[in-house]
Length: 198
Image 1 (cartoon, helix red, strand yellow):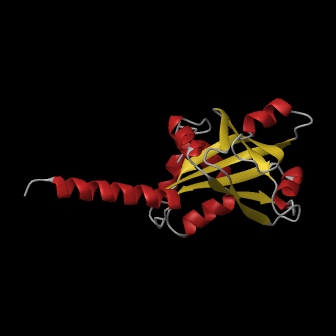
Image 2 (cartoon, one colour):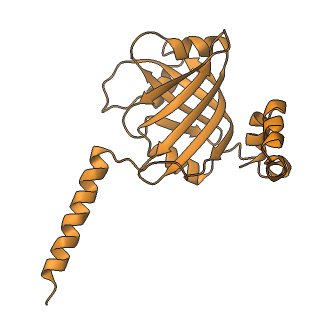
């Protein structure tokens, strides 16, 4: 954890809950650390580039949170700089709940999962909506030539904090491509064993 993370999330109610359940003292250290973790390092950049989906939370005018799964080809969420990420917002169910929420409240939170390796990265930031008519170069940077889904806009997120989460309760799950890679590795190992002299 980092100070940027605790600055955003350790509200007075959270601190009260930590006190009530006995973890306040253990969590105080995160508020004193010098590691701000507001800039992405190579580890986060590499992890983000390997994702083909994430979960995004926004907040509506009425205060209710809204969580949506966002997906696309691997690497569709792009690191634009050490403190900025963005993605092409592909046409979906046209309810525009996330986009509408962002029009009223720029705060956004992402959770990115690597189920196979039981890793999870959380990002907090402030999002803005970019349209091709105003920022064609930026939208072109977010597009993926081999993926032909219509891009309606870009979502650009200024990263305020990030944190790696504990893997304890992440159940390993595998994509079709990961399963095929495991099968190929298994077949290669069987072939090596079969080729050994007895």
